[in-house]
Length: 198
Image 1: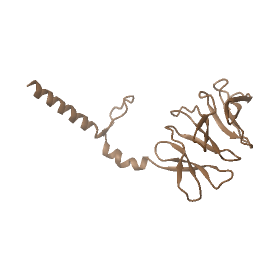
Image 2 (image 1 turned 90 degrees about the vertical axis):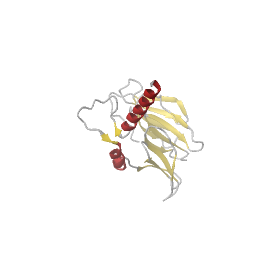
Image 3 (image 1 turned 90 degrees about the horizontal axis):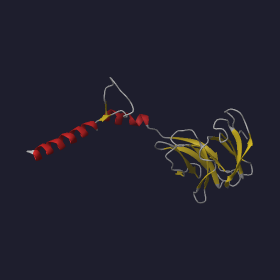
Image 4 (image 1 turned 120 degrees about the horizontal axis):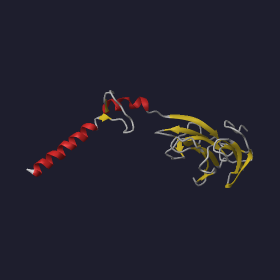
């Protein structure tokens, strides 16, 4: 009799779990009262309207007929390379977080800068992607908010805004593109909203 009751209990629990998979349940952090249950079939049928792909131009190669674009295939925008007009795109970055921008090195185009944060926290970090070997180098401190990176015309240095000093004031910093330890502040500012233009 005990064994029979155990089997019935397992079957009832399995049926309850199966029934729950037919509905979309809110996250446990959300209190939802008086809201009808959403059938999983409805969520599946409208998914094609809520998921989308997009592409945006990011940067021209300085010497070739190539470009970097930001493309969203799944949850986040990533950097892709298009090697010739009408050519297929090749994905270069594969991060769980969105890439905010991409800029070719302005003389040879052998690398590009990109910015990204973690989990939407907007504490953007600046990275250099080496097109020769695919290595990614963090150029900022990994903690502060860093914005508006721009290459020097010679392609050896990068200027950007950073909150590294106080956590809120945006100062102007310069870093050697091949040496993250060379970062130094060149202009101290008060408040936010400062950025590099040229």
